[in-house]
Image (cartoon, rainbow, N blue to C red; front, side, top):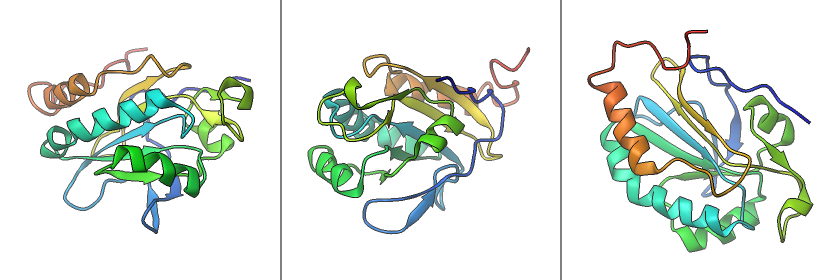
Length: 177
């Protein structure tokens, strides 16, 4: 199965998901006090590399927030599975759960079935990272089909600082053709 990839500069889809701690979030919109949004899609509780990456996200959070970037992590896991994994992460960012296969496809993510992981109950999204600007446009996108190919979050923070600073008036990369 294939899905279309979101184009750099396109409007990021409005997807509302439940979050741990209660309520729902539109993952394309930052909370008050922030004007950019970083959405990281992780595979779920079955993935120890995801747990490590989410801990790294905690470490990068202060730098991202200082740049005006809100952060949310998203998976297809159930509330119970997401909560169990977050006991190991202690996130200081919102965690959304219940991403559906049609939503995964809308985001252009790779989707794997239960036999692609241990302790997996349903199809799940492979990793994706999206940075959305104040206009809702996709500034940065990284999509992988494996858990061990993800951008370093320190570099993402530096890159956002560069895009918001010296390159703020430049066109979004990857939009020429």
